[in-house]
Image (cartoon, rainbow, N blue to C red; front, side, top):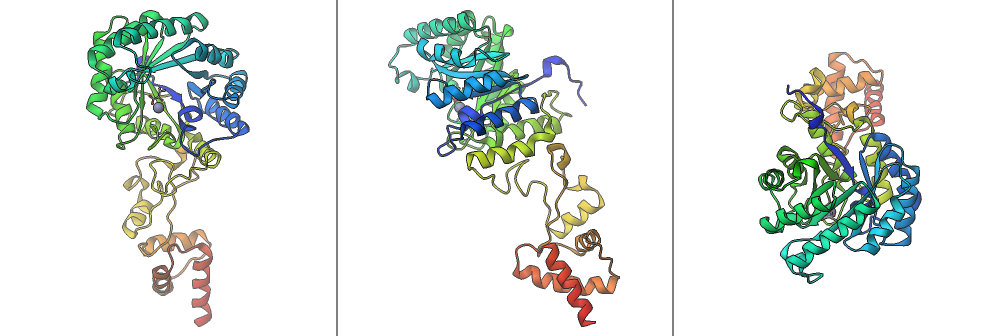
Length: 390
Ligand code: KIV
Ligand code: ZN
């Protein structure tokens, strides 16, 4: 077991209400956003990215109200690299107990073509906009969008400029989910080792899941020295989504033996917020989704159910209670065995002798072959049918 110290604290930056809501079709109402922000604050999220204030009147209103109601979390708004966006963002977040401006610009060769800036012109723009933000707010985050496809020397150069201009957090986005874990760790480590002033700021990691690597990349970036993970509840987000909050938080908690880090998240609130975000966004959680999927703590096969009944650690590396679930579920289906059937019947107040159980088990298997899941009512009907026949 490794010993955790303050330098091992990983800040959780939740962007469900900004990057998550950018997912096509995931728009949430004003009331839903306020409620989700409150749940995030209460569960111990360190920074809430509440929206993109220049994007619409609705976003501005939501960010402003979330800022006013905030308790412990830093409230952050997103702004492109221009004074109008940054001023609008500041207007929205300024009443938070702890406001943050997050400004960004695409720095990779492809993204530099969009505003059609040379490397030098972009460097100048970064200096001006980060300085502008810092004149308004003490807490400024800067992101070189598409950082993982930006030339290394240029990335080091612009990160240095942003730090000198006053950025207190530098976020390294893997905007298109292109990086692998080795690269993610090397980029952060390389920046910390190379860029003057890097040891005075916090590096953040912001991963997208296009190759299914967002969680692995985020954890690798932390191993490289990042101390802020940007994520969303249920991994909601553009295309294949962002790093899932519940995955990184539970990975850090569960593998503390090899990861010395910790977060401030009250994990027992995970299930509740997952359900709330799913219903507000209209994005159902897939059954086999890690941590929060319906099947994440369910065991149907006979061998697994028997093992679980003997000792849950046989097939569970986390306790369902730790994410706010009442317990493990052992759904009865055609793969289930006699031990699970006996346990379920006991739970329903039915204690059968071995020969009776054998009989009910045969009829249960027959039913399970025709039905995906056998419910409590089905079982009681099987038991009573047996009694009637006797
Ligand atoms: O994915 C990305 O690059 C972003 C930035 C705005 C930080 O969401
Ligand atoms: Zn993003």
